[in-house]
Amino acid sequence: MPLPARCERVATSLNRTVAGDTFSTQSSLYKPVEQRVNLKFLVKLGKTFTEAYAMLKEVYGNGCLSRTQGFEWFKRFKEGREMIEDDRTLKKL
Image (cartoon, rainbow, N blue to C red; front, side):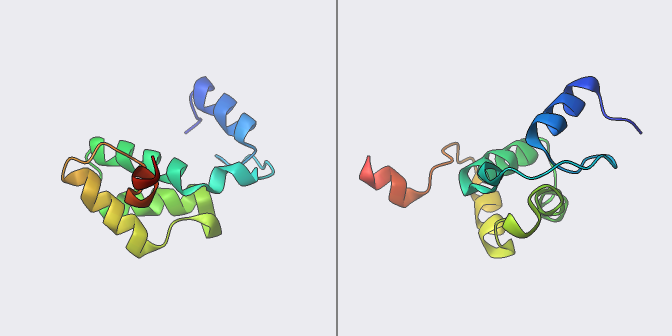
């Protein structure tokens, strides 16, 4: 099934492999904060942790959060946490 035009544009700009098209990878994609945003979004969509983590692994590959870190953040978002910054970062502010 082809991706919607909007997703195709994003995939092209991110330089990743999506739907059989090969692109190079940008290192900025591997930031944990971005992965937390995506994880929060998947929680709001009602995905299970297994589904959500599989999606993160598909997108971020070896740069993905560990399963343990992913589960901790998934649990926090499931319990209603809205902030994506980790607690150490919040204390510095």
